[in-house]
Image 1 (cartoon, one colour):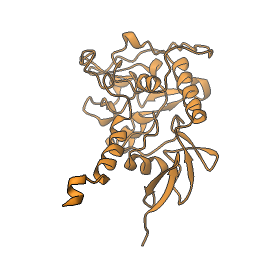
Image 2 (cartoon, rainbow, N blue to C red):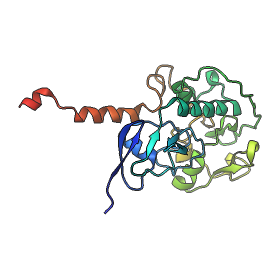
Image 3 (tube, rainbow, N blue to C red):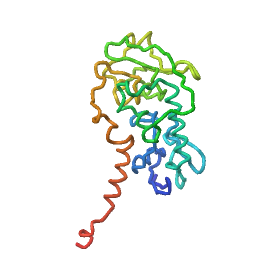
Image 4 (cartoon, one colour):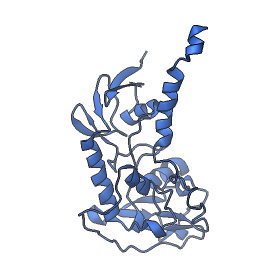
Amino acid sequence: MSTEFEFTVDGETVVAKPGQTIMDACDDAGVYIPRLCDVEGLVPQGSCRVCTVKVNGRTAAACTQPAEPGVVVENDTSQVQGYRRDLVRMLFHEGNHLCPICEASGRCELQAMAYRLGISQDSLYPYLQPVRPVDASHPDIALDTNRCILCGRCIRASRDVDGKNIFEYVGRGIHKRIGVNAENLAASNASIDDYAMSLEVCPVGCIIRKREGFFAPIGQRQFDNQPIGWKIEARHKNRIAVHQIDPSEEQS
């Protein structure tokens, strides 16, 4: 019978189960690894590379890299965090992310990741400033691919959960974007009730649910009071609290 095993992350022991990825095991242990293309319930894709870690000295995507006994993982080091900052900066420069006027501001995972990584200003990368048409043909949903970060979460949600295959990648290289399986979104079988259209799937403001913009005031938005990843880190704090022995109980 398969048994649990251990590996280390930044010197801390993490227990893993057979078949888990490094990210799966770290999530269970309350060790947060930043990610944008990965979300619970969808098959990992490993495309954003924000979850890059070092495994025995070599870089790997934590969301797809299997956990193995005894490996040494570097997650929260200056070098690894530097990789992530550059990746997130490039995502900002490749799209049009005007946070102050975006209805996803405050709940946008890209924005929240930038804050977590300490990114507060632009970098030397050139802004590509794409000009792609906004598809507002559907009565309940709009699609602004100028904000898309090509995480593929909508593709996997529509394919694997909804069984509709509404979204897919179109084009290659710098021209790659998200397309729909019809002339426009209104001509597809997309529904506002699809999981792919839910707020937890698109990490930015690419998929827009009409008549629901700016629904939460500043101060009550998803990441206004807690950083991205805080729920996973809370598991680590709770685990430590459970293992701590109250002196009064020890004497009884």
